Image 1: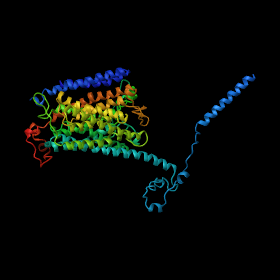
Image 2 (image 1 turned 120 degrees about the vertical axis):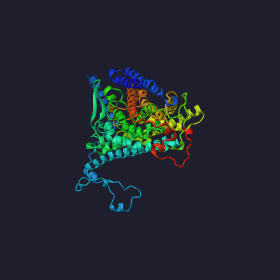
Image 3 (image 1 turned 120 degrees about the horizontal axis):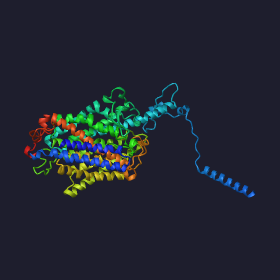
Image 4 (image 1 turned 90 degrees about the vertical axis):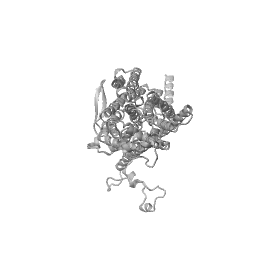
Length: 60
Length: 543
């Protein structure tokens, strides 16, 4: 699951960076960049961290 | 016919009268006066007798006789004066940038005692040694590899007059535009980069890089194997930090978002809220996930326990040292004090101190209202949060905006610390993820909101003419550029740091054994206690 999370996090960056070439409208770019940031945050907090928390030292 | 001639005569006289009035009102343009070598030679200089008598008033020292002459037979010429003016301009900028760099280097001392004070006495030697050696490890990595990647393609920096040898950037073409990825000159400062201007750049950028590295040691303190820390820090100084710094400051693709895609002035980060603090903060986040919390930080039901630091006096003294160093961090980022709009260093310095003040107030009152006491360590962290947040916008915003940015930062760090600990269940010993990561990102975003368009550093920023202007002053494109930078920090830098430290975890192992952690890292890892004459609490009570 952590690897999927890493992929999603990186994909968020790719989406955000691509926004500048996909459209010339700043409003549209803003939306795409925010989607990219949300994807990356989701990857970190929703996938990577929970995967590591499963075996957290305080649960043993 | 007579009337027509009369009307023309009146019109002519009125016209000439008006023209005369205009000529009278306008100041007479002074004819340019040529200065000759003869004028220079006539400049008064004190006699040897006057100088021998001493210059208590300081009016004789520093005069035309002090200007080096190229040809003693000709004496002082205009060419000599012009050469001296150019040399003094660059010398002023060199001295300014070097001294501010020295101040930033001293921030390592601040970080060292903040982190050691927030840790427990049984780990004091280990925490202090990480902060001590991160300076050397980072510098070695940066000298060998990192500086070339970051600054190898930055080109000539006008304020320093001589960084032209840094002229090779590796770039690819995407969406029809060039995307700079990393520099290719400057490794080990050899060849043509053995240059006085490049040396100034290296020193200044190196101490910035080391600041980012030392952020991670605070988060992973009290359970990080010393050998793993050295490997991780070396990679960060050689690759992680330089890559993002190249994109933002070294002529890379983030800096050129303005010139290539019309996004404001490109990603604008005056002194490094993103480049330095967020890179350190997101790397700290990756480390906190990988290395896990300290034993005893969380109960079996997931509720957190407070593990107080052993010396709050060290913590607050360290915060003051950091604030002192910040006067190098932000104002020094002009890379000059003379001409090219660099007198704005006064504004940058005032913005810096105001944001720190505002952060400490809002953080202190947040804790006071929420928990009943003005928590000292969180007030210190809120002070630092204000400084972190103003780092990117310090060169672009008004004093009032600085106070607003600092006030928000002070509260944000408290909320973020609670979120990291209670929701994410991560153990961040010093709060570095929140102070540097969260507020670094807030600082980057605040440029896109509050930049007032009044700054003018040589007429352009990132190759785009005019001044950096945020959304509140009319440029939405700048905010988009800033958010692309934020996405890069969260999406790329985090992933890169995570993979690097994941590999180290598999190949070497980050965490010490539980027995070592419970007893304290000083003896097992470092061979000596930080406080050998102190009686430490029983290990069962020191978790």
